Every structure is written in structure tokens, then in C-alpha cells.
Image (cartoon, rainbow, N blue to C red):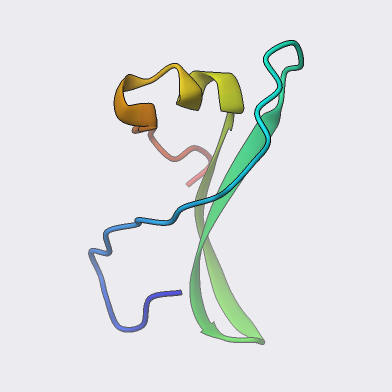
Length: 67
């Protein structure tokens, strides 16, 4: 969560087991969180762990969908 930032830089590390033989789906959902009763959906993106692992420096940039 980042408060009062209209142009945040999202940098978060996740530790996950990567199993080469299995397609592991991941989904990222971005919300504008105001209060527990008031949050606005910004967008989401789905990908696979293998696409992230196969990207340069294990970093991938994707466009949000369903915004």
C-alpha cells in the first residue's frame, strides 16, 4: 500500500517456488484504497511464473487489463 501517491513505483519482492514442469499462474490486482469500505479497482494482469523467470533480470512489465 502506498498512501497519497498518484504515480507510484511498484517494487515488491515475492519468494515463490518455481517448478519448471508446472504452469504456475499469478494474478496482480491494483486497487485505489481509500478506506476498508471505499476502494476503487484500477486494473489487473495475469501471467505465469515462467514468463517472469524467463524475462531479463526476472523483471517483466505488463499493461493492466480491465481498467
